[in-house]
Length: 125
Picture 1 (tube, rainbow, N blue to C red):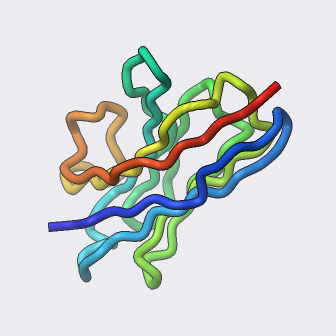
Picture 2: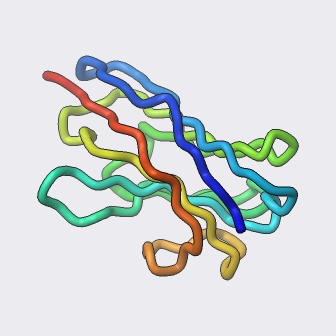
């Protein structure tokens, strides 16, 4: 079993940056593709970004492409989400998730086995 703990959320003004981290327990981190999702109040959970097991492949939602960067450090069992040029519409709870079944990381939440509890990101205008 994998436990995931997100950190780095907070409040920031539009145009600012935040870096989210997700620390994973266990010694099998490199066997999981990792993803970030977000859920705004009253909305469904949306895909944000995913990264392959090795870190060599990434994918992004169109809404964050060019502004967010996903990366991972397998030696530290950690995945990151660097968020730049933040907008009020980026306000949400951000979750990291672990996907054992695909190499590059799934687009759908149901593809992920393990989830963190989330970290709140609030962007004010």
